[in-house]
Length: 161
Image (cartoon, rainbow, N blue to C red; front, side):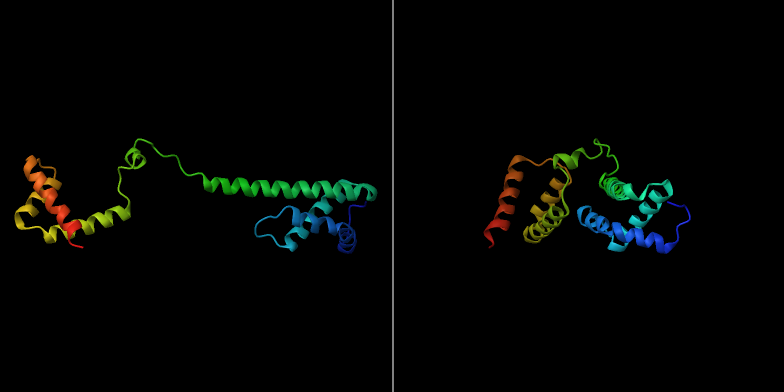
């Protein structure tokens, strides 16, 4: 083939191999590509082949192979690019050990426990409210105080239904 191809000759040759483009567009779907993108890539492959000096007799076979390989490479790069977003940054496992063991409260758990605590504090008398606040602050309670506080909380949460 001559190196100075005009657009009409290129389009004429492309028309003879266009069915390969259509077939491969269905075989190798690339995200966000339209048939025009596949055709443009096909024209580029065809132009490269003609510039390389492939004869008209071998053009069909060479185009079929090179075009399909180009689409496979594009698809492979697309998947590799997506994998880059799937991989998060490395985590220091020791910073998140409590979360992994389930010791960190979820937002739902925090909301529910906060509303239950408000309900319990509203219904406790002043003495037991002070006991509960000191217990939640980490102070030690006598076992009988702890038992009575527990009984009052159970009564508030389960008996008032």
